[in-house]
Length: 611
Image (cartoon, rainbow, N blue to C red; front, side, top):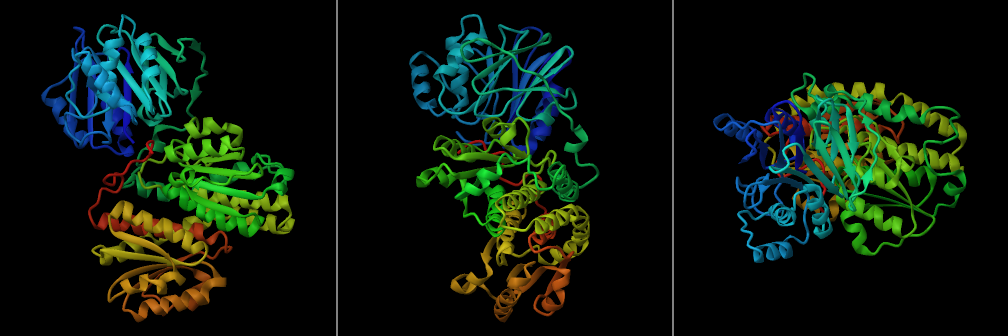
């Protein structure tokens, strides 16, 4: 959530800042602004509530010029979305301007302290506190003032700082919130995420907690909270900007759905090299695997649903008890954590605050920690270390509603289950080899699953005005239904809920009535008879059924559903990965039919960095 950009160099800053903000807009925001230091040494601030187009219009009416500046897209936490509460914020004299992500937890006590010193506040934000604090602490060197301020700030933050008394420098600092620094000839950049600067540089530094970077046209210096110089190697970004652009698709979400066959391949290939029964990619030895007494998979939102899938497949194959926990609840139930427990944190961004906090709690209590993550250099990846981070290699995911990241997280759960089962001897080597072969063929089958799009477009045009949708399934199909329901509500704003099909008669069946839409997922032959019985109960109440079904099961399902969407036949454990594709397409098509802003759903942010 929120986005920070900054630039210093020989070009006009404002166009670069606006370009960067545009590339960060996927993170979710409700206002935006820029601050630019002009040639006369004055900081000029422009900010506006709403979309970036509003800020662009304001800049057309009242341009700003200068070679250094900062920008921000805000997602409101303190104070309503408004022009006044939008970032950047300045001190009383207007000589210091800052942008800020996440939350300063002790802002109220700092505000009272600063008011007693004569500071006058004009916004409701915690961010303005930092601008005034820096002004009070400033004694000729903004780096020193920032070091002092960091010692007083409580909470999480990423900061970008512009000071009119230091026209040749741009500063930034971070603590538990992502911030990337980019280097180019004669220029330097700051951003919350790599795409914001990728058209200008591929060489970046991932700042660590409590580090400060001082940027100038001559280069970048990094310091710790004591002012000691820190050395960082530049990380070269391998993927190009086209990976973060629409590539001819109407929306990022649709593009990312269509990228899933390649994403599956990218996740699988690095784990399919060398001896098939040596799992060097998994930092768990055979001895550790055999001693495992419990596995906890902890995550939020879509990643949590991948964890639920992981619970099913790991328990089935590896025969280890698995709990799937919502990260925001994990710490507060005083979990029982043992030394022979494996804790798996799942996060697309690697910045999810609740997941990070749960990870630290499990680490403190002695669990072995793994992370499943898509973003190299993210906070969770650094906390765990590259050796213990299983990167999904899905590529940049821009749409707020996750699709290919979820797909690769689920595939990673399967790979972990397969590896642990093989090491523990709970499946035969021949069965492990068969499953690996099935996984290798999954991308080709995913391509076929994408062919359901046209039929789903038609169906969605007839169903787009539905106000409520139920998703039902059994076993792995129930785990999948949870994610399908989330996708629909995220992007189309249709109220949707997932139920284990057998639970309908324990209450939810009271909500079934003539014309109610129910989406059923049918990929598990062993549960087919039970699921069909549930579908008959649904139809008897007059509800309409859309079934996503394996093609080798269709003869049993024809006549039980009003509309059938077929996916290729596949192994029972792998078929849900194919079924998720039409379910994602259904959510997308419903959103388009309803005229929703697919890539930027209201009130949502891509990376949730506050608890």
